Image 1 (cartoon, rainbow over the protein chains, first blue to last red):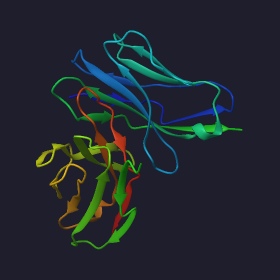
Image 2 (cartoon, rainbow over the protein chains, first blue to last red):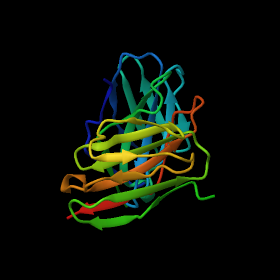
Image 3 (spheres, each protein chain N blue to C red):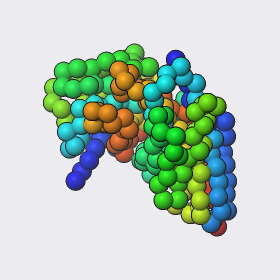
Length: 116
Length: 113
């Protein structure tokens, strides 16, 4: 079974600085998708970024980028120029490709605090 | 464009009562999901549905029932609520057809006393 591990229960960053959140996963699949979701205090789960395993290029969405290391099964999220609105719980999630459609496996989450 | 909505947003019920949580999406997504979120467990899949009248169990289905008679609705019923079902429940949807990300509703906080 696939597992997703976020080893940092909490992280903090100063406003305008850069922070990296870690995620590792375990899978025997070659085709899969990885996601980062943000959950602010409002509780809403918001998709931040996605990465397809077959793509070597790291995904980027504005201030958010990933460092995808397929051999190491690592998928970290880098937030640049951190803003107060980035404060939230961040979840890493894995989805196998092909016929395993629908089964997102989540990590335990990392609480990010942004200090002004 | 309402997207995906859940009702109620908050619910308090007593042990043994039947409770139904509603989920409605306006995107015509094929797939819909129910998760529960608990401290220390992250999000866990309860049930999911690939289309109307097609449902399947997730990781923690015991004590829950789902139905999907229409594509846009996916209600979750707790047949006889227990205190261990106190949680935040999220509904999500996904279009399928090679798109794997899921889009979440705002959640329902359920307390069973």
